[in-house]
Structures are given as C-alpha cells and as structure tokens.
Image 1 (cartoon, rainbow, N blue to C red):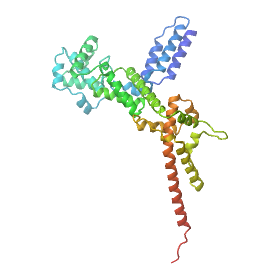
Image 2 (cartoon, rainbow, N blue to C red):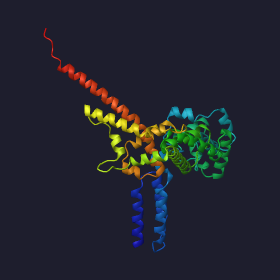
Image 3 (tube, helix red, strand yellow):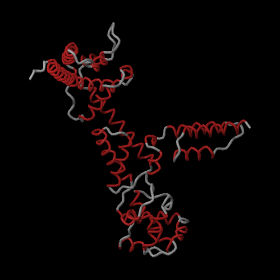
Length: 377
C-alpha cells in the first residue's frame, strides 16, 4: 500500500508541474511504465531521472504548441493549399506508377508530398497525416479506396526504401551533411542579431528548409541553438569587457557602490537624470552632463566587430537593472554591461539636458505671453 501511494503521488506531482502537450505525454509514458520492486527503491530512482530529463530538456524555450508543430502537420490544409503543395506533376506520377499495388503507390505519394510540406520523414509515414491530404492524393492517382493505405503501414522496410528513393529524387541532404555549415550560419546570426532562442530556432528551420536539408530531431536542433546562442553571448561579453583599461575598469566598478552618506549607487544616480523642469533642475542636469563627460567612460572605443545593436541592447538592460543584481553577474557580463551603459548615459544625459532646456524656453515664452496685458481697442 505504501509503495502504491508513493507511486501515485509521484505521478500526480509530475503531471501537476508539467504543461500539456508532447512533454506531458513523455512524462506520462515514463511514469506509467515503472514497476515496483516491492520496496519502492526503483520508483524513486526513476522519478529522479525522469524529472531531471524533463526539467532540463533544451526544448523548454519552445511553447508546447511550437514543439508539437515541429516537423508535423499542424493544421488541415485547405483546398487551395492542397492544390498548391500536394499536387502531383507528371514526373511524380511516373515515379509513383512504378510501385506495385495501390497501397504502395498511395503510401509513396504520401511520403513524397509530406516531406516537401513538413521538411522531414515521419517515423510512421501516416502519423498525423490529415485525411484530406490522403483523399486528395488518392483522387489524383485514381485510387477509389483510400483505406488501402492501411496495408502500407504494415511494412516498415518499404517505408525506409521509399524514403531513400524520395530523398534522392528531391536532392534532400541529411542533417549531418549540413550541420557544420548551419553552425557557422547560426553563429554569425546570433552575433549580429542577438535574437532570442525561439527566433533563432525558427531561423534555423527556415535555413534548413531553404537549403533542402532534412530537419533533425527537435532536441538536436534546440540544443544546437541554445549552445551557439550562449557561445556568442559570452563572446560579446568578453569582447566588450576587454576594451577598458584597468583604471577604467575600477571606475566602472565604483558605479555600483553606494558612496558614504548616500542612499543609492552612482549608477542609479546617473540614470535618474533631471526630475524637475526648473532653473535649479537645469543646473543639476548640466552638472550631471559635466560629471559624466568628465569621467570619460563614455568615450571607450568599441571593437569594430561588435554590432551596434548588441551594444544598445546591453545598454538598455544596464539602464533598468538594479545595481545589486548587476553586481551579482559574472565579471565579463557585468563589465560589458557597465561599458555599454556608460556610453549610452553620456549621450542620454546630453539629450535630457537639451530637452529640459527646450521645455524651459517654451514655458518661459508661454508665461510671458500670458502675463502680457491685452490691448484695448
């Protein structure tokens, strides 16, 4: 009874912590497949392995819907889409006609059009293929009974043989043949764009489809995206952090300290800017400009290889993150953020001062106009 109760609790716990979709199905299969050894030890070890695998799957930056749609039929194609993407031309029909039996001809057609549409061969060539697709292909091949396709699903060697023939006909490359080129392409894209993991994943899928490469398993691609994105992010931190001199590094680090008798760090004070549109506020704004320009931190020369967009993203983060949180970042990331933020603050404080001056001038002119007596007629 104790073992059964513990097993049930573990199953409910896994289900309650995981979203619905492919990952939930995996959890259910893992859990329901366990067997008790009588003392509960196997169940506890298996729970740990399953939980770890699911919690750290590299697919976790994709939503369940995005993961479920990868390399599969996400929706039922409409008639226009069927006629555009599942039309069999004469060359297709000539190749299909060589197959013996209507079930083989229809099955071959399903694999041929499916790989064109979703970018990969399905382990089960009929898994998830909409009935509308099968009926449309059967109609083109003059096969009256599309249910004969059930026979095609019974011979796995035939599926593999047909997939090989289709791959050759369409000139599709295996993922391994293009893996190195994709890594180079993704690295350049990540360095220049700073895109998030989902955008990079979608970029990788588009590149594979455009270059006639069969899509790999979702875990293979998500791991590659996550690794390359992390590598290029670390490269950005290291490149920018290497630019300041030792004296400038010390000055930048001091921005995260609270001076004696003050309530905020120098970085937070610099970021605040002028608070009131008044004469004293204008004086404080100009004093802040003078202070920041005098520090000379904004005139750091950046490596020409560093994309301006990436530096602006670092600065945007540096202008909002709390100083205490920034201090806890690894050295390279913290210093790179401070460099980008100091450069941005130099221009930002000047812009703020000019905007304040414009506002004061407009306010002064409107005040004089209002105070001017109205002339009598």
